[in-house]
Length: 173
Image (cartoon, rainbow, N blue to C red; front, side):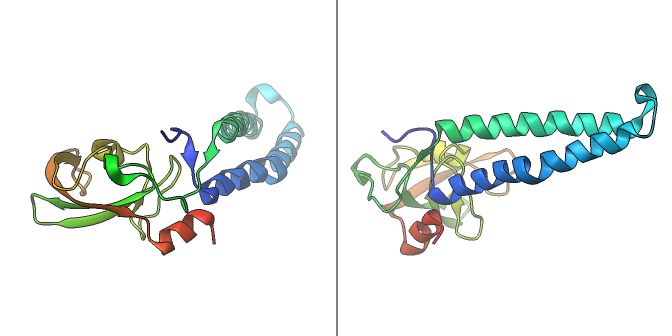
């Protein structure tokens, strides 16, 4: 079983970059903003100071969350072929035919992975969770692709390995 914290190398590096930006750019700028706001005088009625302190709290919270996420993340090698004998799983492409006549092919990658252009969806997303374990020919109830909160019936047409393009995307190649 793949860890629920599995993610691609690409998404892991993106989160690392977010953390580094906070540490190297945002926090130093915020410290300067706090210092500059202190120079305006009375802190009890200093809007600039309160704004800068609120931003500091937000940055600290985001930094702690990113550190926690990165510490628990497992980089998944999407070049390794998953066992598709048990149906839909992380690291596969699924073609689904909705009862509306629309057909869609999605790739299920890791928890942080998403790319609309390549139809990559997160393994933690509702769509992926509704598909796990489904085999070709199974009828499943899936979230409406128009995001209106409704569910539609769909038939799983195929469960296949990832394409070279998607595996390269996951490697950040």
